[in-house]
Amino acid sequence: MCASPAYIAKSPPLTRPEDLLNHNCFVYTNDSRPGFWTFSDGEHERSIQVKGRFYVNSSLAKRDALLQGCGITLTPRLVVEDLLKDGSLISLLDDFAPRELGLFALCAPQRHKLRKIRTVIDFMVRKLRANNDQSIR
Image (tube, rainbow, N blue to C red; front, side, top):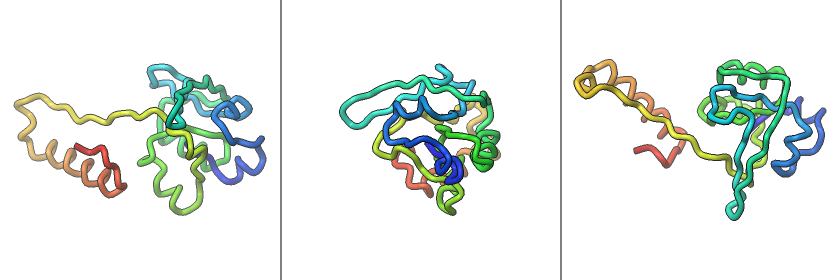
């Protein structure tokens, strides 16, 4: 979860997931439960139904809106990693882990030998491993 420093500077305090109710959160419409963000503090899991003025089905659109200081979003780290590193965005509520999502590459059995498909899969694995993603199999 992240936002721009400009958004955080002009917004109410954010110290726990329930504080998200006081913020403009981007709702990703392709989620199985749009607007429900689930967090764990290691002992307890809780879901918060966030609200906002921006309903979107594109991670790139969320990224652009973040940079404009429009709100907060929960997005895969690989979408914003470069912006977190250069300080354009800041990570939020790091003590509360969001629900993990999977990323899968599936192809028909006869197509798995095609070089271009294998190249894309190998690229994805290298990119994710470079971000220290320990769940790559």
